[in-house]
Every structure is written in structure tokens, then in C-alpha cells.
Amino acid sequence: MYSKCIFGQTPQIQRNMINPLGDIPFQNNEYKFSIEHLNELQNKYTNHLASKSYSLIQNDLLEYSDLYTNISKIELNSTQKNMKLLLKISLHGLTGAINAFHLNKKNIELNLENMILKSKVKTMLSNKNNRSVTEMESNMSIVKKFTLAPLYSYYIVLFGVPDNGFEPDKINQIISFMKKYNVDF
Image (cartoon, rainbow, N blue to C red; front, top):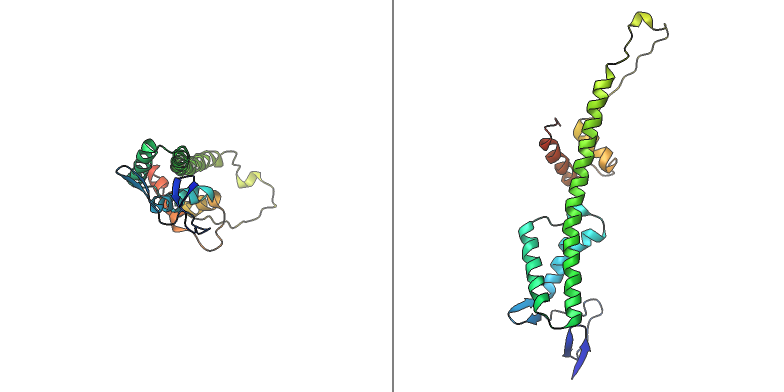
């Protein structure tokens, strides 16, 4: 006995509500598309895209390319309309995740570049309009000031004050950009 589903006719069996596809592979000629492909797509790409955790998206372009190629081949060879649509949505999600990763990386880089430029402008303007002590009024005060290392200052400006310490992944991102622009950290 067969029943209809979006993946064609399948044997009528009891399906799990959480994982209705089970471990049934989708086969198209010599290409196989299994639940592992979907899990990889979800765990490494679309979950992080949906949760806006862009820095956690898998950035290995070879792995991305292999997954994209496998899904594309199956989509091109699929004759089922619903299966084609599901695979096309999967490809769009995969592409969106990679684009979001790179846009996030570029955004961080531009924010750091902007902060560096602001710092340079501030340094240039800081020695202007100085008056000698004798010209100033007699009411003077001394202020003690401290500054954080640029690495931590940039981290706080970009990501806010950390609740549980500085995250190594985010610090590594900032370090790579600082090295790129030859900024001391």
C-alpha cells in the first residue's frame, strides 16, 4: 500500500512527527540525498542564519561547494515538482547562510576600520587648542584616566561588554582585522 507525500509515493508506514522522513534516502539515478545532507545543511548553515549567529556559520568553502553541488545535481535530475521546490529552498538557504557569513565579516571589518579612522582623527585634533597653564584660571583639577588595549576597546564597541568574559572567536576575528590594517593590539 502506497501513500502520497511531497516526495512521491512512499510505502504507507507510521511516521515520526519530529522526523517524518526518517532515514529514507531520496534517490535520483546515481545521486543519493539523505537526511544527513539536510542535517548538515541545518546544523552548519541555516540554524546559525536563523538565529543570527553569523560568525558560527561554517566557512569552509570546499565543504559548502560540495554540499551545494550535491543538492544541485539532485535538484536538476528530480522529476518531482515538490522535491525540486524543497531542494531549491535548501540551495537558497545554503547560499543565504554563506552570504550572511561574509556580510557579517565585512561589517565587522568596516566597523573596525571606522573606529581606527575615528581614533586617528581624534589623535590629530587632540593637540589643538592647547593653552599654557599660566593663561588658565587658578581652578585646576587633576583627572586620572585609563584606557583599555585597543583589542578590548574594539570588542566592547562592536559586541558590547561581555557577561561571561571575552569570546575567543570574536577576539580572533578582531585580531585578524587588526593585523590586516597593521593596528597594534
